[in-house]
Every structure is written in C-alpha cells, then in structure tokens.
Image (cartoon, rainbow, N blue to C red):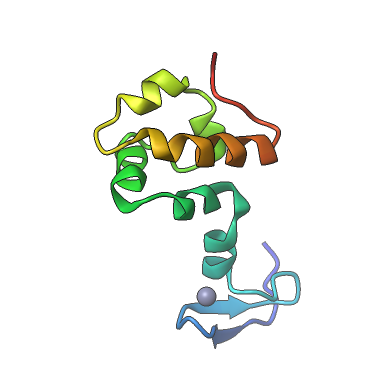
Length: 97
Ligand SMILES: [Zn+2]
C-alpha cells in the first residue's frame, strides 16, 4: 500500500475524515447522500422503522419483496406504498410480483 499525504479534516456535519486527492469529500456524508437509501426519508417514522427492522435499507433489497409482504410489516401502511413504488421505478426497479 502506498502512503499518500493526507490531512485530517472535519466536514460541515462534524465528521472527521482524512482528506486525500482521490477522495476529496467526506465519506460519511457521501454515504448518507446515497440515492439508494434516500427513499427511507420519504416514509413516516413507523413505516421507516418497519423496513429497517427487516434490514431493508436500500431499494435493491426492497425489490426482493412483494407489495403484500411489505404491507404485512408492523407499522407499514397502504399510504407508504405509492411512495415506495415510485422510488423503485426511479431506479428501474419494482416490487417482486
Ligand atoms: Zn460529513
């Protein structure tokens, strides 16, 4: 492994990270901004927790379930389904049929 000069930086959110030329942005913020799990922010807190409790933290994982299975999760309501459906569609995914 080649040692490159790095400096410890603190981003605007307070995360500390080592800045290097090939990774100029905060990796923690990058992770949080991932569009893949942005869909969780669309949901109400109980619905979000329901998905997280089942380990569904990405649209990829969500697409492995059918709508019926998701609706059976405690806290998940029918009102969340259109949001999930369109979030999946934006990524070219869909619920398992
Ligand atoms: Zn950050």
